[in-house]
Amino acid sequence: MSNKLRIVMANDHGATELTRELKDYLESKGHEVVWLGTQTNDSVDYPDQAEKACREFLKGSYDFGILCCGTGIGISISANKIHGIRCALPQNCYAAQMAKEHNNANFLAFGGRIDYPESPTSMVQTFIDTAVSPEPRHRNREAKMMALEKA
Ligand code: RB5
Image (cartoon, rainbow, N blue to C red):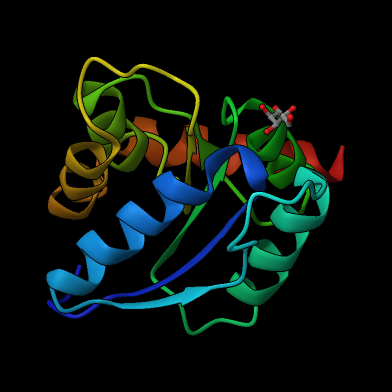
């Protein structure tokens, strides 16, 4: 990925602090962040937040997106219902690396109420630092994943 990235983010009330932390981190690294999620702790619905960020991403000017809710589960499931989205829910830096290398994920999801063994900021940085593998078997699997949207 090029030096300065454009990242879209959204979240529900279960991860406002985590989303702010990730935004501050990315901006400190010189990236541009568009934050569409809630910035308060008032209750909002994670499918709406996922949809907002995914529709914005699909307009085309973003490198990837980040979605956060209490666990990361509801918002990642929601995102993966939208055609063109491959949202990974990494548990650690290894999974974040694989999410790029093998799966070519275009969204990462995290949980604001999850106690991670490695910080979400380090997982995001690992994802940024990793390239998509050119290995045909991985790209064929990605094509098969996307073909499931049409099945
Ligand atoms: C909201 O309370 C919570 O359900 C949501 O943030 C998320 O954890 C759902 O998967």
